[in-house]
Amino acid sequence: MLPSAAAEVTWIADYAAGGGASFGETEVDTTDRFERVRERLRQFVAERDWDQFHTPKNLAMALVAEAGEVVEHFQWLTPEQSACLPAETLAEVELEIADVLLFLFRLCDKLGVDALASAERKLELNALKYPVEKARGKATKYDRL
Image (cartoon, rainbow, N blue to C red; front, side):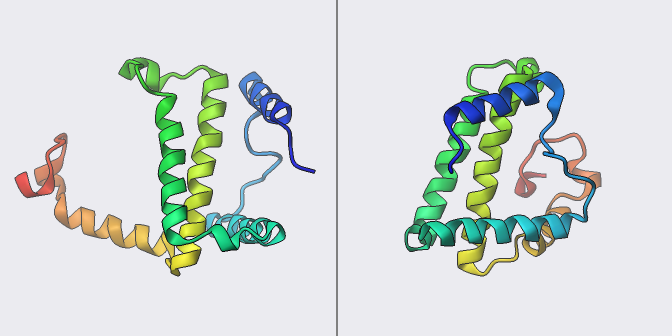
């Protein structure tokens, strides 16, 4: 049975009341958690026969749409307000971030991309583009440092 909108609202209310978002998780190796979520997502999609709709184009578009839903929560807030969201809003943002992550997982699966390895490579490249001695405390693009 699919969770209802009421169940999601209940989860948000529980989270806002200090219930946390871990759903009973204990500390687990991040890579194991990453793989476990990816496998659960694959199963979720297969059970619904949705793979036929999950082309890279569609997944990229869905990812951007979900990222827009994250942004929506911050629109018109001051920097101070955005850094101190009410618990209920933070719970809603967390669910939108999860949507972004899940679509990113699917896109990586469809393209055969190892997201963690790619992120590690990108951090190494960024360290070269933004050396500490030139970039510290600056929001300047690397080609203008």
